[in-house]
Image: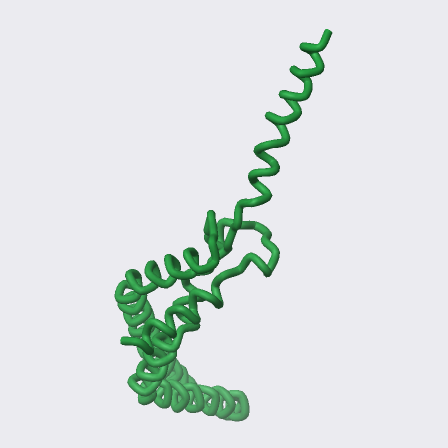
Amino acid sequence: MKHPKYLAALLVLILVAPAAMAQDTKIGILNPLRALFASDAAQVIQEELEAELQPDQERLTELSEELAALAEQFQQNEAVMTEEEKRRMNSNAQDLQVQLQLIQERVQNALNERNQEFLESMQSQLADAVSEVVAAGGFDLILNADSAPYFAPVLDITARVTAKLNEMAESE
């Protein structure tokens, strides 16, 4: 009769022990892209890129204003315009739209290229920063924020990793 009590107690221990051990597991959640792009290094790259693309941005603004003025002029004068004037105005608007699209694509491609270069150049620093944060925080498991449908904000170590990246950059 004593054996069933011991068996029941042993089963309870077997079932409860993993849950107790899991409670001691320290988990962190990381958004690696946010950590990288919030770093000081990313801000420097962003400022350089903005300066590099400033002429394109100014040209985009000019073209947008020209296109808006052309559309307004067309609306105001459409009733008194000849078919030739309408065709010419439509052709001008299409030319402006093509120019806008080409510049927008060039700017987007430059942004994508620079972001990709930045990500590739920062992979080892990110790995080092994560390792140091994990070691300092005693984490047992780090999950990518994109793979966790919900997590308490207290588990997010992204800001710590960004701070570590900044600290590592200052010491170089």
